[in-house]
Image (cartoon, rainbow, N blue to C red; front, side, top):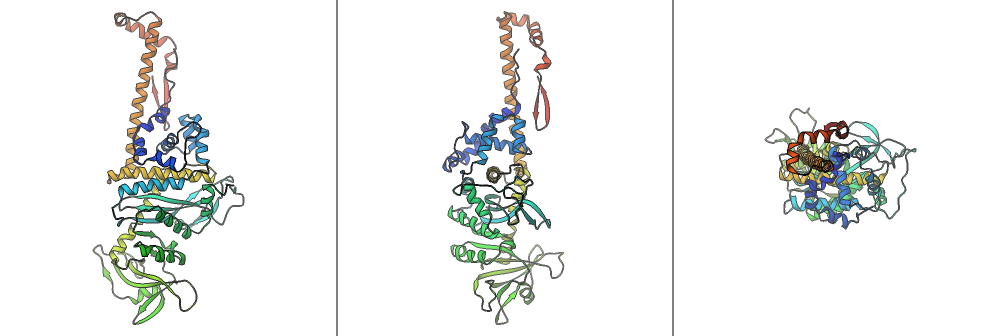
Length: 484
């Protein structure tokens, strides 16, 4: 008897993933249209939409690496195709990602974009090994230690409910390891352009990403970032390019020696944050017990001359939280002078949404799944995961009470059940077909003969070859299920 059970359960998943919710999401976001538009087309006889589906399967199955996914699913025929897909330097992954997010913004943003914000933040991407291209050393302020690898600067788009990754840059540092490999890319390729941008300062990177968002007509009213992105160049861009268009900055400010133009007792002088804080005596209190006080000040340039020019006016708010020590406070500035201190505080708290987004991508989207040492592959891999996350957020928009984790969990369960049903039907079909061939070979074809000799037929059928040889183990996520 032929080996009936020669189909791996994971191979069923490959065939069925494009018929599941993923296919509906691809249709909803016009993924095939955008792939063709940015020049990501059919390679080595495989549709790019199918290759994307395979990557999505790797994400949902939480394999430790792409290589592990290829090995466990036993899809060696895709090995070269997948590598070429990731290593192609001419693919414009940024344009694809922004196109998908723009489609998302049209579906899930208010008509005016009043409640929408662009949020900037960065996170670490640790890598080790001599072959890792442009590997550098960075200082992680959250842990207070150095790490090797890259830094990822994200720009998220927030609609008041979810934050999705609009753009990112995998930053390479100045402290590059001497032993680290230096990638060589065509100066006309998209990978080289992204590498050139990766060498800029983080503030310049964020400004470039905001410019791209403006170019693609992404709806937003506020830009949110922490104190690390405040500098002369950033302030000048905000006041000259964004504020005239009704777009404003809300940012945390360091309690440093940096001076602001402040009118105190009828006299105008440049004062540091601490001095401005002490000059305002009266506190007000919110309903939640947070105390605040605010004042309008001028942002001056950072030159050392006495008569420094004012870049623009901001509302500076001081917040003291219950339980904090006396003299400990947070400072937030906003270029929209019409907002109250409570509204500015509420607006800045939305910055936390990008922290949630980064955590979700790391925890559920396989942020560290790629073990490739190629810079081009890292860009492609992270772009795919950001696109996947954006699509899942569209499911969250329909059921806002659910977390991304719950959505991924429910999707996985329904997908596993569907694939197991397909696999079972396949096994039954092949078994019946082989049984009918066996009955024909021993001269039994009439229904009455089958009813009379059923036990004898089945006994002979199972003993034709060793039945134990026909029992297969379905290996799925490390779990083995014996199926006859």
